[in-house]
Image 1 (cartoon, rainbow over the protein chains, first blue to last red):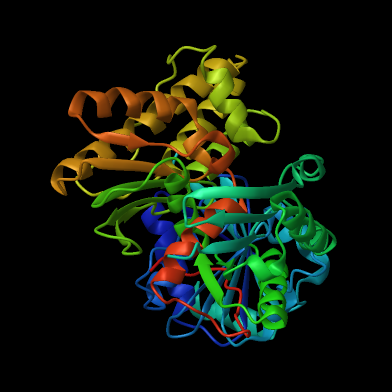
Image 2 (spheres, rainbow over the protein chains, first blue to last red):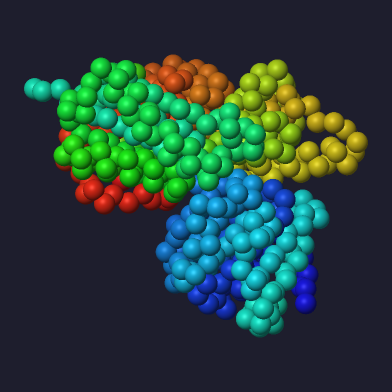
Length: 149
Length: 334
């Protein structure tokens, strides 16, 4: 099953993220893929906002991982700079720490991703228009999508 | 009064560095081992390689620095180390080395925030005078910090999304300018003209910055030109982008100086090496009679001299850590 959603503004992208947050559970894994400027970090801002995190979500590109305290902890990862070299970084530890894990450029670390997860691909189709292709893997994530979308 | 000699260790990203600084203002010796050449092959810093190389380098760099200073561990008053923020694996190497040394030689261990280090790098140029405003610009940070006195950091604004150095790197990526993108964009911007229409990002009443929108505007511009079959002039793109960045950074900085009635401005962080920012701030500060300090080029990038310097002031204020100091990937400056 694959869902396709079109958003016309950053605000609409944020709203979709907020809907997902409302159905959150510990160790929820959301993988974001899509080119630079396609709205990945904006999506994470939506999740953080709904988790009650007041801190500004800034890009984790430089530090790879940023952690925030909310209703559940939020682990915001950008693995672009790893270029697939994940050994010794401890990425896997975040999958079972009880928080919500959002990974930007997740496709570059495909081999270590848990089989059950939510994949979202962002496609730029216009200046502000984006198509989100959402694919759930595993029953929990299928139910999540049915509840939210 | 006895001299206070601090040994500083910095390993938060891709440089392994150890430095010995006397009384927070006099650099005795610094050794920096950069992994830039290794990382250039990957188009960025690779954390696993970074931490592995730090492990290989750290003891050599410590020994080399002591030798260069003609000192032994007995001469050292305290050990200062960057505990964060940064790449956790890289930070750990410095923190463990510093804790171990402090434990073996029974020296006080002083934890230093990486950004405090960048700010205090200016004290190696000349004595910092308070109150002051610090503009911190780097790959991971873009902050305006008001300092009433030593070690009092009040953040009055910061980036809401991408850091300025990161925006430079991403624009370089889109325009196929090789690593390290930021310095190259700065360099070629002088060969170009400000001809591309790009927005002035977050031009509002706050002291916050946003570079994500400007980045997207550059991406859209490149895509649109490609679709029309035009080639982008990299020099012009670099110039247009840098013009917007410099304009917004300097505009908000100058306004903050006025509002907080501050006569001293210091610039800190890797992007303090950016020629556009330097030139514009020099011009504006001269007009407004503001005292402006930049770290010299060698202190702009990550180095342990700045950590030993900030460590001196932290030490004087009684800041200490146990030997179980934890490295932190993210941590607010305070």
